[in-house]
Amino acid sequence: MKKIICGAILFIAVLILLVRAGELDASLKKYEANWESLNTHPCPQWFPDAKFGIFVVWGPYSAPAYRARKGYAEWIGHPGRGWMNDQFIRKTYGQNVAYEDFGRMFKAELFDPNQWAELFARSGARYVVFTAKYHDGFCLWPTKYAKTKNTNQWHSDVVGPKRDLVGELTDAVRATGLKMGLYWSLAEWFHPLCCDGGKNIWYCADPQRYAQEHMFPQFKEMVTRYKPSLIFGDGDWVPPEKTKTTELVAWLYNESPVREEIVINDRFGLCKRDWGKAGDYYCTEYGSGFNDRQDKPWEENRGMGTSFGYNRMETIDHYKTGAQLVHFLIEMVAKGGNLLLCVGPAGDGRIPVIMQERLLQIGDWLKVNGEAIYGTHRWNWDFYKEDIVRYTAKGSDLYAICVEWPGKELVLKSPKPLAGAKVTMLGYADRIKWRMEGENLCIDAPQLTIDKLPCQYAWTFKIEGAARQR
Image 1 (spheres, rainbow, N blue to C red):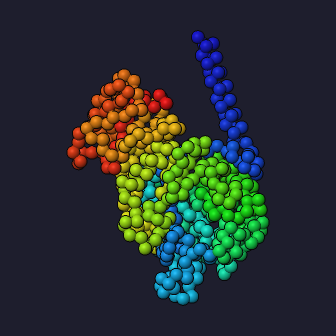
Image 2: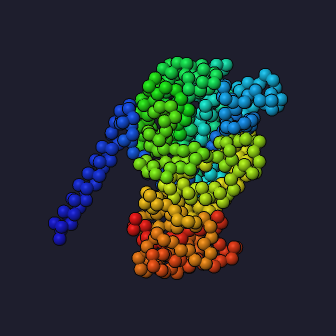
Image 3: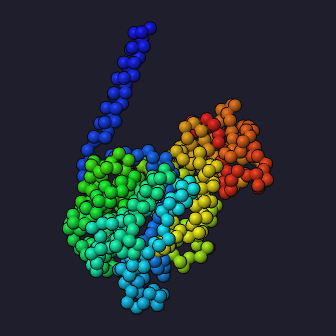
C-alpha cells in the first residue's frame, strides 16, 4: 500500500512539473515582429468569457458635444471632415474658435471616477475601455509625448481638467473587480509629423519619425504606467510598413508588464482599414457582429445613440430602449461574440442620466440571466437562433433565451434533451414541465402575472444536458 501511495505522489509531482514546464514554455515564447508570428498569440480566456463591456469616449470634443451632419460627434475637430466652421459652433464659441479651445473648455469638474466605476459594475459589465487618447491626440494622462502644431502640452494634466483621468478611473474600475482597458489612436489629426491637416486622412507627413519619436514612446509609457488588460487600437491610417507597428505589438507580447493577460483588437495597422485579419480579436462598429467568423473571439462596439461621444443634439428618440439593448446583447452573445456598449459623458464629467438608466436596466436583466451570458459559447457554429429564441451554451447545458414571452407553451424544434432532464427558468424557483411531441420539445411556460416575472425584456429557459447534441 505504501508503494502505491508513494508511486501516486511521485506521478502527481511529475505531472505538476510537466504542466508548469508547459506554462513556462508558453510564457517564454518570443513573438517576431510580423503578423504571421503575432497572430499565433492566444487570446486570454477572460475576454471571450466576459461578453459585456463598457466603452467610454470622452475628451475635448465632449465640450461642444455637437454633430452637424452625418458622422460621429467626436469627429468635430477633423481638419477636413469635421464641422469646426459650422454656423452653430461659430455663433456659440466665437468666429475665431480653434479645436484647442475645446481642450481648455473640457473641465471635467464633476467627474467622479468612483461613481462611474460603481455604475459600470451595476450594469453587469465585466470590463471597461476608456479613451486614453482619441484621434485629436489629446491624452487623458500626464505625458511628455502629447503636442499639436500649436502647443507642446496637449494633455489633461495641464489643459482643461488638470487631472490624471486615466489613472483615477483605472484605480476606481479595478477596485470593483472589473478589467480595465484603454482605447488608443495610432494616428493623430494635429501632430506636426502625422496627417496633413487637410482632407487626406490617410496621409502621414513623416511616418518614420512620428513612430519613433512619438507613437512608440507614448504607447510604451501608457502601457507601463497603467498596465491595461486590453488595448483598443484605432486610427490605423499611418502606413504600417513605415511605422513598423508590428515591432510595437511584439514588445507588447514579449516584454511589456501586461504580456500575460493583454488583449488587442484588429486595428493595429495591418494595412489601411483591413480589419478582421490580425490581433487577438476582431471587431465590428455599429454593425451586427459576425455570423460566420469564429476563428477568433470578436466584439461589436457601438453607442446607445448615433455617436460614441456625447451629442447634445440627440433626443430620446435617438437612443435605444432598454429592451432593444438587452436584445442586442443577447444577439451578439448567441452569435458567439461580445458587446462593447459606449457611454459618452458630458464635458463636465457627468454621464447623461438616460445612459445611466439604460446601463442599470441591462444590469437588472443580467442579475437574473447572467448565467446564460457570461462564459457561454455559441451553440454549434452554424446555429444560434430559432424564432423568438436565441441559444447559448455552457458545458452540457443549453440556454434558450426568449426575446418575447412565449405564452403558455414554448415549442422548440432543435433541442433534444434526454429523458428525465431538468428544465428551469432563470429567476423562477419551481421546476418546469416538458415533453417531446415527435421532434418538438414542448416546455410549459409558468403562468405569472407581470409583477411576478423574474425580469423584463427576455426570459431564459435552462435545458440541462441538451447542449451536448450539437
